Image (tube, rainbow, N blue to C red; front, side, top):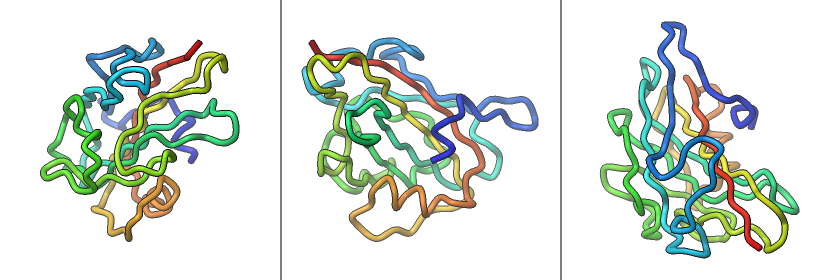
Length: 171
C-alpha cells in the first residue's frame, strides 16, 4: 500500500512514468458520466514512459475518503507493457478477461470491473486515485482477485508507479 502514498515515480534516466486522462486533469472533479450518477463507465486513461524491463501493468482505483476503510473501485492487471491507453468504458463490461487489455478483479461493490465514484450523499468531496504500477513480471492469481491479493502478488515486482487523482462529491 505504500505505493499509494507517492505522487509519481521518477526513473533514474530522468523520464517520468506518467498517468493522465483526457476526461479530467489531476485534482479536478471527475465528470458525472464516469460516476454512479451518470453512465458509470470507466474514464479513458493514458500513460507514458513505463520503466525499462516492464513485463506487465496493473491498475487499482481507490477512494481513501470512504467512511469505513479505503474503498476499491477498480482492479485490472496483466496489461501488456505495449499498452499505453485504456479506452473509455473498457472496464465497464463486467468481463473478467478483456482480450488485449488485461484481467479484471473484484471491486468493493462486489462486482468484476469498474465501479465509479459514488460517495455517500452529503459526505463531502472524496479523492479517487488511479494507481498504475509497472511490474517486472506477469502475475498468476486465483480468482476472485481483490486489490489486497493483487498488492501481495506485486510485492517485489514493482518497477515504478504513477498516480492520477480526481475528486467527486454528491449533495
